[in-house]
Amino acid sequence: MKARWDRMAPALLAVCCVAAPVMAQGGDKGADSSKATDTTPPREDSSVTEHVAHIGGQTIPYKATIGNILLKNADGDPVALLYYTAYTRSDVHDAAQRPVAFIYNGGPGSASIWLHIGAFGPRRVATRDAEYTPPPPYQLSDNANTLLDKTDMVFIDPVGTGFSHVVGKGKTKDFWGIDQDVSSIGQFINRYVTRNGRWNSPKFLIGESYGTFRSAALGNYLQNHDNMTINGIVLISSVLDVNTIFYPPGNDIDYLVYLPSFAATAWYHKLVKDAPDLPAFVDQARKYAAGDYASALMKGSSITPAEKAAVAAQLARFTGLSEDYIMRADLRVSEPQFTAELLRSRGLTTGRLDARFAGPNGDLLSEFAGSDPQSDAISGAYTAAFNSYIRDELKYSVPDRAYVPLSGEANGAWDWRRNGQSLSSPNTEPDLAQAILTNPNLQVEIENGYFDLATPFFATEYTRDHLGLSPKLVSNIQLKYYMAGHMMYVHDEDLAKLKGNISAFIDRASKPRE
Image (tube, rainbow, N blue to C red):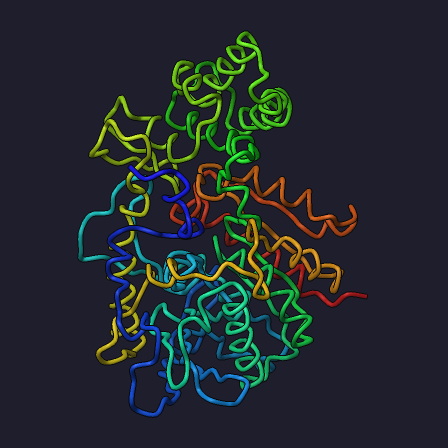
């Protein structure tokens, strides 16, 4: 078994639908090769189809455009074709007054498929909640919770994902990195806005997982590089500071910020005795983590046996793990250890993306979980349904090029430096803070799943409170909570709640300011 450190880097942030089956499908040579292999001159193309959606009593005609925009380097040479799918309302007289949202997933190396047909697109794939979705055929249906009644939507597949790939003089290293990714997505947004007359439209960035890491830097980039003011940023299952999910040696912050999520998971699986309702129990875990648990970990090896035993007893109550296991872990149980251990007696592994899911564990002696049951449960359905959707309903395909839901090669080759400088921990907190300082009207909403063990909600709360902003500017950042995990939209009730929250957010952030 590899050491924890080797296991987590550099694929740490591949937390949105990262699964072995998806990564295996991500081996498209044209998308992942170090240089462009196409010999034909690159050209833009698109397919436009007309549709009608029925949302909340409204009949909304809309245009679906799937195509690409040619990206160029500083010398004007073509370097990549970046693909997107846009949904724009057809009966709007002045599109410049209508909001437009740019939407993407994370990885890094993930296409936008998950938010596209799982959450906000006009069509949605049906999957089982908190259990495995059966094999095909899969069903697509009209999505009553699409955001199309509130905003036009542009789903972006970064280079190396979806159909997006390098061309001409492009190399993947020009796109696979924090700054490179932000620059390329920024160029795409600028060109889309310019070509479609959307400079005066209220603009929103909606990202999930690494997409939140991207959004913080991208929002700052667009405002300061392109003078493109952003109305709002929605962070779904957020991580801005890698240290809060990385368990770096000698730094105990991760054990503290994960405790409330462990408590929520134990509560869900009925491993907590005499527990109150979930929010109350989670709040107890928050207070304990920030109080006695933090004090105990601060003592390090100087903690007394009696103190250690008392902490182990409390952690056992919150996590559902045995006191013996916690003592042997020196009071420090990591997320992969927790997901492997919690349901071991039942022969199951707990989900990482969504701890409500559980799946068979092939190695009951393993220290770390070997796979993610939630990702295993839904990835096949999303991939098959999306491939059928874009070809059959949107009438678009790229001959001899597979759609890449997630590129394992891009994820593994990701450049985590900023401005060419290596960092002890990648962090886009300063970017978000600067974006708000540049634009004090910028609104931010963060969507958190109680059962998300990939990007824990208490870590997000910690991040918000350590941005170094004034209380007035911190009030620009609102947090919402859901009874699901990383992809809270797989839970139908929470998808409806997510739609309501983001709709209200778009309305609020689009209003003219006096």
